[in-house]
Length: 294
Image (cartoon, rainbow, N blue to C red; front, top):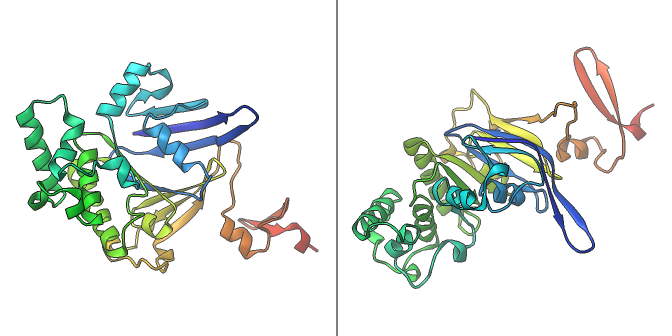
């Protein structure tokens, strides 16, 4: 569904250039539900904007559903945003119009549709997200979790093939977050939607099978759920104790470069080192801080 090859994004101002993406590589399969994590400034929001057609790469290759995003005209890009991709934002002001009802909010992306079909589709979507009894309620009558469910229904209005969720549970409590994640998993399974969740919350990210970490504009590591891990995502602990549910792999590019995860460098006292020593011992590559080598 998504292929990023050596993706580069440079933002220019009058006096400075910022390289937000520095040769990022990523693949997402059709129908996959995965998460992208990273600290502020890592490049994850820039990547999300690229996937959503809100920004264009400076260099590299980006294809989504077989579409070469760099070759799209402005008109084709508008059609892509309207027909291929759906967004769920953390900020409710970007999702919802407060003085409209839940149904009226869901109808907004379908303004050009037949009035009857538009209403039927909105009711169908609200029922799908568990809000069939709230269709005529205004936003102030809905809880935070219910408002986010309305936002999910809006994102599905035009039957997208790709759903992008930016911190979808960032403003919700733990219980409501679990409900929203459960709904996204159900939509992924029932509709075959490809879902990419962008977050800084590792515990939230680990509720999906694959987690890609971005650091300094590049994919740094991938965490894949263990094959023998039978604990369901719904019952996984949300207090940081799920560390053994996934196996972490460093991502290596074609030139053999990898980023060593920060917690590994911290563990050996090499986080701020400018060089490290590599040794080949039997069938293992051993990394040591240079100042600890004798």
